[in-house]
Image (tube, rainbow, N blue to C red; front, side):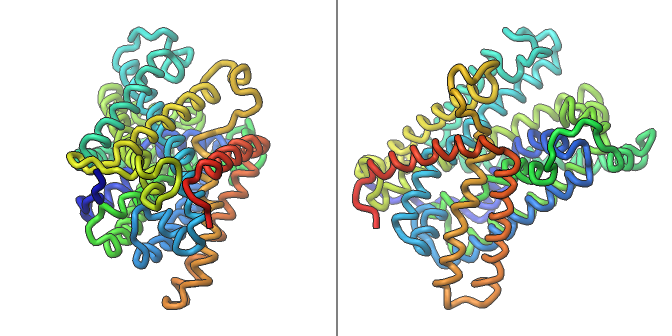
Length: 467
């Protein structure tokens, strides 16, 4: 039996959706990576965070303008359909459903498992792991894989059976995750400037690692911020379930984006006050927490990191569960009569949700083999690429035609909204694509092959001719 999705989310939930999806593992996971990419150059790392945040904000402003005009089922697919056409909208929806949503969700499920084991080992150094923690057991042990699968299935269950509970989980985890971020931003900065023996903040700002990790540090660092800043577009997936969407969704995107940028930069500066650059490169932000707050409180804050990752994964799973539905609602894709069905009890597209979980499992297996296996080439050959970054940057490439056609068609808005904002968004998107090409090199080609294969499959099984 078919039903329409109910409008069950308000403005606050939408803001928490934006903030909660974006702020999660990335700020903890990629802060270390960015410092590595910049060769320990803290100011250059801050610049990378600023550039990544600026690109995110101009894209948010551009889509916020579209959100005031277009409202149907799934924001990004709606905007593509209204500006470029239904054929392009289908391919974007197919990409988001089969690659973008599940790659990010699977990475987050792994990060939830990783930081859970990190917390357990920090509390009990003798915690039994099949592979000792000192040998990477928290990253690729059987226990890590089992926890990854558990988190993925648990998140799917909550979203598929109770979307309202999923919304409450999102708001709760968003509030909780600000505890370690704000503490580190404030206390870490004070500790480094005043209480540090040598003024750690100043020392880190002036220190550069002698071991060059990248020949193009700014480009590769900005590319790394893509994962940390990404996810806000997924909030548009609840377009059909948001009360007064044309007014509340633009507000949620802009306000949520601003909160994210300010929080990230403040946190990054705070972390610099808790440890040396080399310690941060070797051990990540965990060492800064324990140096400042001690082992006990530092480990408790690590638990908050786990909660933060769970909240982000929950928001990503929300997009996974609605991906196939956004196509079926337009009578596109395979078996639209099956995937547009809404359960009368849960008000969720459960058939579409099952497909979302399948793709999460597929990309979760790929991520585990390509990034964590000792010899991934034996399974994947040359097709090894970073599924936590390249698919994200692909979305920036796909945004560009939408911005161009918005500039062409939107004759009823002012010059700033019609030309200036989308032009800045195009420049920012192009910069992100260039950064990815420079940062990942030949891996981009292998991803492009996979991307084309998925798009061809999507074309073959399209339910009706694409126009």
